[in-house]
Each structure stands twice: as C-alpha cells, then as structure tokens.
Length: 223
Image (cartoon, rainbow, N blue to C red; front, side):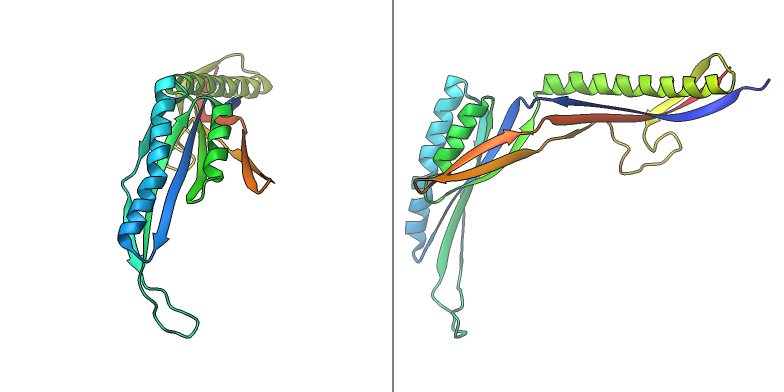
C-alpha cells in the first residue's frame, strides 16, 4: 500500500499575567508668548522627570525616557474669518516602564490631576525572559497539536504511524507569505476606569491577560 501524505494545522494559546506596564504621558502648554510657553512646559516636565528618576533609583520602574520638547506656532481664525495673532504651543512626551501596577495607578492619578499633563496609552508587556519562555511553550504545543491531529487522520484510514516531513509557520509550507504567518503572536489590552471624586479624575488601569498564540502547518507521511 502506498504512503499517504497528511497536511494539518496545529494551534496553541495561553494567557499570561502582564509583568510590565509602559505608560505614556504628555505635558502641553500654549499661549501668545513663545518664551512663556517654553518656561511653562519646562515647569511641567521637570518635576515629572525628577519623580521618575527617584522611582527608578528606588526600583519602582525599570526605565523611563523623555522626548525633546516640540515648539510650534499657528495663527487661528475667528468666526468672522479674520486671522488672529499667533498662538505658540509646546509639548513633550514621557514614557515610563512600571513593574508595580499599584504604583502605576497612583502615578497616573497624580498625572491626571495636574493641569497641563495628560495620561496617554499604557502598553502591557512581559519581560524578555518570560516572553521567550512562553513563546517556546506555545510553539511546542502547536506542533504537538499538529502531530495529534495527523495521528487521528492516520488512524481513521487504518495507518499506525505518522512520520514528519515538513513543519512551518502558517503560509510558509506552501511557499506563501501570508499576513498571519508570523508566530507566536502576543495580544494585550488594558481597561481604564475614570472616576471623578471631588473634581479630580481617578485613573485605574486593569490589565487583561496577555494572550500568546502560535500556529503551525505540518506535513506527515502515514505509514
């Protein structure tokens, strides 16, 4: 009896609690005088930089960065179609990687309550070591799922053994390069609750688990 070639797909998914939170905040200022606007943005950003430096020294954050201040001007138009005097703007973005979710929440509450500072996005991540380990695990499980599926097919047609011929990321087994081919993949979301108490917004970030997925295509010979 001739050998039978079986081609299958194997999938795996796991959920991991986030370990790192990369928070983005921005300081903005505007006004009719460029010098005053620059002074204002410096007064807003410097305490934040000093606080982040202290937090890093204490071990509350793993790293932080600050972009250079951007300064520009425009001339708005009023409702009568007349161009008004120039308005100067300044902005700077700061990013901090927190390892403590409670400290992150407290910090964001302070930012949100400060005029001229805005809370941006929060990206939830794993440490490089955890990410590498989890990606290996889901990739291994995806291959195991492919073997199990191929074995089931072989058994159904009366074959006792499957021998691997090819294993590849999605879309690569047939020489393709589809958009879904890279594996494993990671997904993370964060829910934000804003509760105004006494006129000051309270920010509470509740991260969803990070979803790590892997999928492979595999070709076996059923003997």
